[in-house]
Image 1 (cartoon, rainbow, N blue to C red):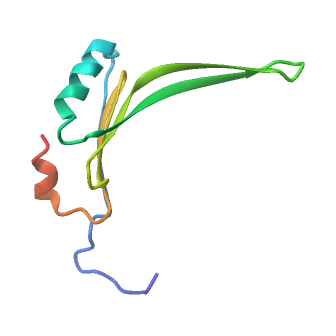
Image 2: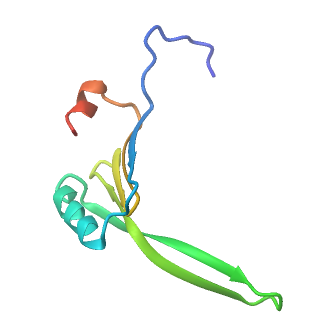
Amino acid sequence: MNGHTYRNPPIVEAVFEVQFSEPLSGRDLDRLRERFINRYPKVDQQYQVDVEINPDGRATTKAAPIGFRMTSSNALDTVTLQHQRFRYEQNGSVRGMGKIRQHR
């Protein structure tokens, strides 16, 4: 660090997450993805991957889709849509809390 102390330090990352007690359906996730696609056009499918290693050293894997990670064009904002959670992130120097509040 440079030893400089900020009177009002900048926010470098802001995260808002909601976890659901009941999982969202695949249809619900698809609807949410369509709702956010204009603001977050880069979409990556997310998977839960389970790996089992047998005593003989052979490994088996299972992958199941669990949602999407969507990124804004400038790569500073992301939305994660999963069966059990919704997460919004602003990375880099956040442009102020007023901007975050606009995403409600």
